[in-house]
Length: 323
Ligand code: CUA
Image: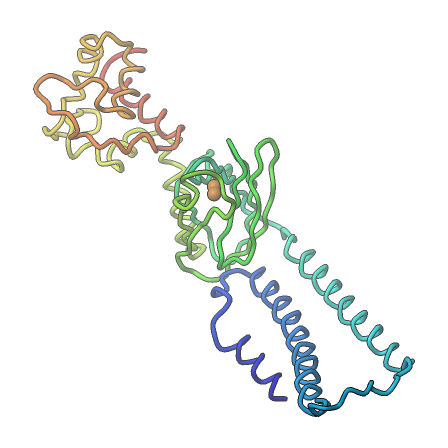
């Protein structure tokens, strides 16, 4: 009893497991605690018998005699074979049921493509015109089917609060089913050593109410594909606070006047579209005369490729140029 109390305290007092934020996490944690309880009970019995024997059957200092010969005990042998067999079999059955349930997609799963590369995550929503985001947003209470791809080496997708991990392997698509059931913000972690930047390969998952998720998906989806997509990217990325562009109603004067993009491209000796793309991704490659370098942020290279293309197309067409 004492041994069991000590083992139980070690198991229960510290918070070993992360908070649960998915239906799957509840089931997985149940298996964990089921197995842990069995292990704790067996350990307590073994430790108690061992300690009792050490004290009670200790030989006196001068006793060099052999112990009494002991023959097999059929009842005991049957018990120590049958009981572990039953316990291990029950763990296997319970695990199989949990795994089968966790993979159930339900009627209307949300598809999200997870793309892993050294050293970043991106998330694509095929149902929202393939809109891509660096932050994972999910609705509460709807089953999500992740289709996981790696572009370079093996990574592993893990949200501790969701209770599951899945490797991202180059050349194949792996899958993971998660039903988030708690609104909140949780970390996305790469849990496969994938290179020097492995420890920095993190993102965030935001679990939202069904309503605000639908609203976000609609506006974000429209922002990359609908009419006005380029214009809304232009303002949501803060371009209008520094640049002038009539088509976007922008009047900023910190950076060059974007209505003159065709002229700048000519001065740089590049086709307009290529010039615009380079100026967004590598702003210091060509700096217009009269403007200091390093003022334009160099962070736009991380824009998802389709959003970047939409923005470039918008600038091409609204600055009055052609490709
Ligand atoms: Cu990707 Cu570690």
